[in-house]
Length: 356
Image (cartoon, rainbow, N blue to C red; front, side, top):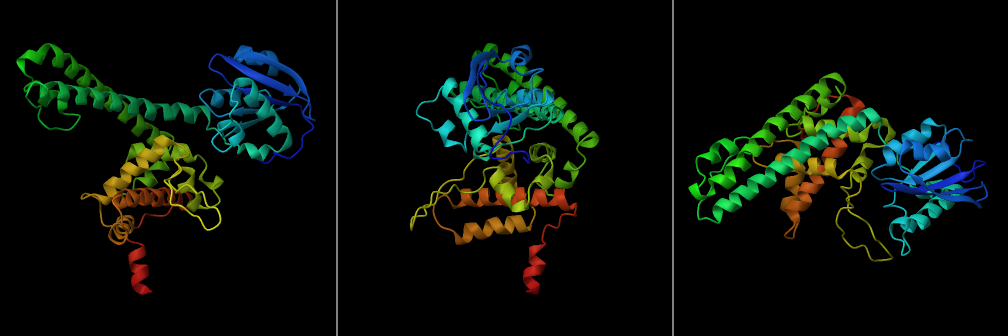
């Protein structure tokens, strides 16, 4: 954010958002507390303190309410800083963590050195609503998977088994194999599973419509076999403006697909990935990596890269590391396709290495 300077002539407010009530500390430009109060986490409740007043710098934590609150406060003319608590140890790892302390810490950091808050930018209201389509579909898929697992478990406990099938065809195939004693229990579950399948297909149509009408750039990403409409749309919505990343290489870290670091002196332990960023998109990228490395994935640079890790690496988790590495490479490649608009070449590195 360009307007984040180490000092400010504005008043500064630290706002700790709660589900119903938020805590705020209003300070002078020098950091002296002018007001501490509670405000309802609603537009009228926040408007009592922030609407129609002199513009100020307001710092708040990212969370459930931070997207709409940050847009609301910015619309009222305030400078809003959305802090990343995972990168601010004074907030995330504080031994005295409560609403009052968090609000005061936000105000202090915003008045002295705003960049210490590791500010993030929320997506627009329209993009957030569109992302809700993806999250809604994901919730239904998880619910269907849970019901299928429960139905199989109930039947297995009676000494029988339901036939193997895809999730879409499960309700129809399983109906004929339900033991008579479990018909009153299993048949209502199969009806719900069938209804969920219909609703999921409706979400799929919405996603296809969004890509056709609003996010045509997502079609560029589907050139890669294994990247479908859900992953491509989720990626585009999470990245937003791809030019805000100086280099494509940093996108892997943005989605938490790079190893965490805790180096000190000669000690440089191998840690797990950081898992920062959007967990939904990270999970989709890993699923795509599984497909690319699997038997149905086409021969491409991504697949060869993962195979080299499997053959040269050691340890029992080498396949997991290869999958994560391919997911990281995929995240970088998708960003490169968005920025350049080039046609995807599955084996671009092969001819280059042969020429060398």
